[in-house]
Structures are given as C-alpha cells and as structure tokens.
Image (cartoon, rainbow, N blue to C red):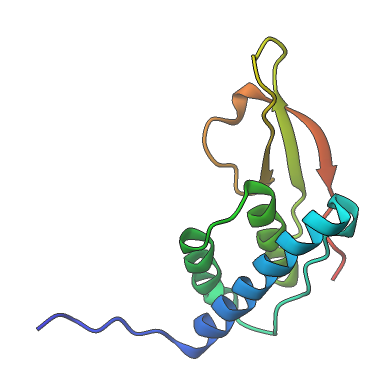
Length: 124
C-alpha cells in the first residue's frame, strides 16, 4: 500500500490563493502592463503553508514575472519583503530576452543578466 500524501488545510488555502493570484497577475499584466499588476495579499496563513504556493507555481503555466510577483506578495505577507528584479542579458545577444526573479530566490544562472528594473516589495 502506498503512503497517503497529507494535504493540510493551510497549504490548500495557500494553493487556492496562489492559483487566483497568478490568474489575476496574468490578466492585469496583459491589460494594464507592469504598473497595473496588483497581487492581492494572501489570507492569514502560517509561512509553512507556502508549500501550497510553490506547488501551484510549479504546476501552473506562468511567466517568470508572474511567478515573481506572486512570490513577492506571499513573502511580504510573512515579513520578508523582497524586491522583484527584472534583468536583460549583456549587449550582443541576437534576440531580446528578459528575466524576472525575486531578490531572495534567484533561479538559474543570473550572472548573465543585468538589472534594469527593481519593483519594491509592497508595504504590509
């Protein structure tokens, strides 16, 4: 018999918030651009419920900017305000690419990116 995976209620609530926040961030970015993208704060949940947020971000399609904005809001609600950083590669690349990440959660090889914009963490 396989062990049953236990999903706790706070993680489930965090996952539901993350799925909605991701949808809203995507919609707002398309309609209003970066200035109009507002991610609502999550419900009061323990930081350990962040595993629900991460599960959604791993499983739902999202851009690096959408992911960073959702993580930024989650982190800010738990007292760890971190900036979202947007960077571009050094000159000489054939096509335009940009990448966004949360300052406290760098991902991949970021040494090739130069910061062009920093989005401050929301005040809680």
